[in-house]
Image (cartoon, rainbow, N blue to C red; front, side, top):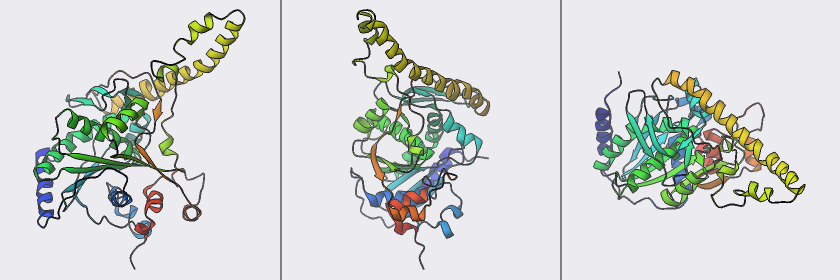
Length: 376
């Protein structure tokens, strides 16, 4: 039987207080990329929900130097999981696990239609998840990862409250792969809660999403980077990793800003003299219609058809009406990790191993290879 959430919060709070018996002077989170922060968070992330063999023996990754695990959740939703890590200097990490080798976990990735970044989900327990992830009404996000976000936040919010009461006001949010994609949405929700005065104004959030797919459209990215996390939201990418390049991005005329030269293209073409108007109309249709057709197919197969599978897994779930777009873009301040010749010696490129450049270890190698060296 799953323990009540208030009990879990109490346990975490007790753990936090124990770790603070000999507190260190706290320094508030600062804007800007910090390789030492990223190194520490990767050491946390590699352990989040993982079996020991993933970060020990021949797969060795050094333990975090500042943070200790205070809480690990049960699996929920699409078998999502998160952990809370805390440090003596009154900082915490919300670390979200990525995809695992289970059907439910992969369904979250493939359920890739977009929905508005503000709306309401009805969860199987009949609880409502009212969410706002951006202030721009044109912002939209990945529906599968939004569902994961809804489940995780039901536990994350009480834990943040417990930490705050224990004096923790600085939170890192991190995740690798799917965990990174979900981290974007969790972070965006929490920041909107802060902007709407539903969280204390002195709480600070800083995000490092590693190997993360694209979480939403251009307007979500703008809002995240300018309004939510200016200087505090980072997207860490191995430039040989294909996962940050997905989901498929399809840009149609509807994805442009309202004022653009394409809005009135058809009326302008009609004003041209014959046969120039026919030629231009033919060219315009050849350029615009394939993208529109592809977007509709994407929404059909990775939205409406998968929705039946999702309803079978999460009975009673109701999602907002799909947003008619699939213009996914990368989000956050991008930290590009460029492999060197030494990297390719360690990670032999093999088309049969699609994830050779994607897992934690190649990222850690590019950020701080000393973390992979087991002590003598």
